Image (cartoon, rainbow over all chains, first blue to last red; front, side):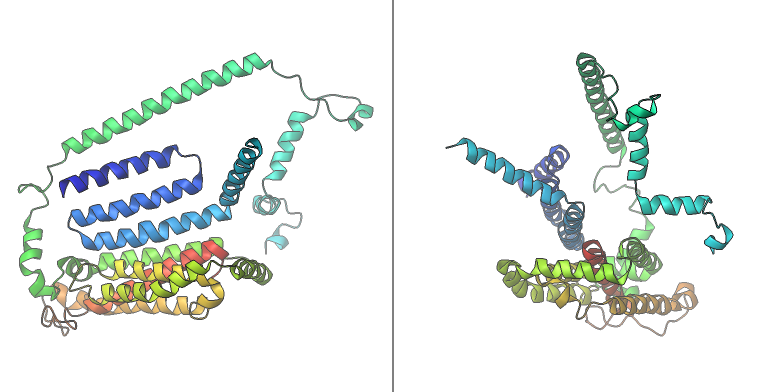
Length: 96
Length: 314
């Protein structure tokens, strides 16, 4: 159990740091979602399953969905997809 | 009203409205103009494209930006280290986790643990605490959610009818080529999630969970359904009128039904509503009904947040 807890805490720390350092907002929201999911397991290890259910529903579900919708509203998702496509095109253009 | 008092539109409010309707680019334009326009030029030359101001030598710019970047880097590192140090110092000052002599282990905890089940009838002592001993706090929390939904509605609800119709048409276009995987999975999962949410709410006084967790689960299921099938299908049962009726009814029921403790329970007077047999589904006095109220408010608030963020209407 202790090993699982330490692994989860390390995962949460890694997620938190990578959210701060990633440039792509969509990636940041997704990583944030993963962090909440790990946190909800940590709540179970701390013997508070009710908090775990709330964390899974609010932190993983609703909060990240609100972030996604906001990103779509400010057209950050489209830009991210576009820049990805451009990058791919460039790579395809270079290979032949 | 404002028009009549202020026919020329010179008041601060009128100017603020004008600023809002014109957006920021008016300000930008003025600033750009002030920067771009050469200060004193003959009228004949203004027809030509305005000359750019003399450029700062590139080396100077580079040196300045490099200095600024290094400064920001050092300042950020110092700030992060300082805040981390502060937090770690504060944490070492806390009493150790789970220690017997911690200040939280006082007579309140003993009373809750020893007499909680007898007094509230709730097997899950957390629910007994938040919906019986401290039901007033929970009423405040539910009202916070309700107020937040109202504020989001004021801010994000699309202004007029045409705007809303336009948004809806856009969405219908988007939903036409919706992902079949998402739709199938949603069709399978949403009933299960809804059932789990209802279970968590109804067993709030028996098992872990309660109104807030169950309501959040229900809200997540609704949002999933809205995402997969669009507002056309979800709007059949979730309309603004339904949202308003359910949240207001739940909050009023909570407030009215909990008002009895101002007269009875709080003063050790006998209460009409008895705790019943702890462990039964219909026990614990008002707690199951209050759980349902909180769950409904949370569920509808979550759905309203998402729908308003997504398309500016419920």
